[in-house]
Image 1 (cartoon, one colour):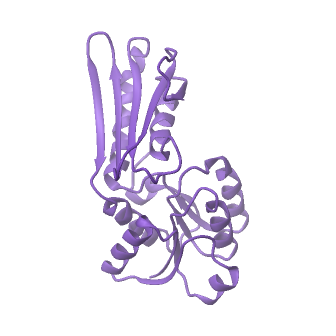
Image 2 (tube, helix red, strand yellow):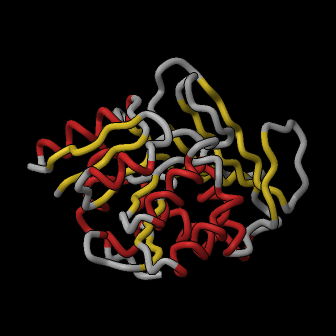
Image 3 (cartoon, rainbow, N blue to C red):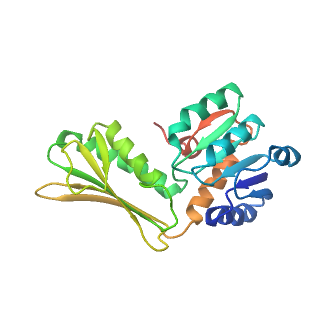
Length: 239
């Protein structure tokens, strides 16, 4: 395939390496929003978008309006997700978003959902904490992955809402602890703690290759498909 990369930072370079190893051609590498005229002159089967929260919306919009499928992993912009879904539907476009493309993390998401269902009868007995650590360059806080974990716990009615970096929380809140340290790729833990025990599940990313491999697999999968998708469809995970 001919792949375009928007957001040519550490993730973009990791995606480029993986895509070339899988015999794809990189037709475009752009750090921020590319000119529309440039997109129209380059033969692209798909764009993989890992830019910044401030530019991601325009990047996705431009690609969809020019009939280019988009796979996006940028976080910190989801207040505009419904607008993107509407544009995608109106233009009969192709869009896939994930807060985390790691196959291991997507399995972790499913474990988190199952655990929160099992814990629901004991919601008054257990405090819930999501602890996430990333590198110093990560802008959004908490991470999109932590928000996805919290959303699934709330969906299963274990708690009602989340709160960030507070010392005291209400019984119906999830505490998210968000740290930015050194070159940490991404660590996430979900902890249930009562007066008698603690249950903890954890995912630790050693490098960016797991995210890059997942993003390229998603790009391969979305070719010739129309609609709005997630890694659930890519991995064949039932809702």
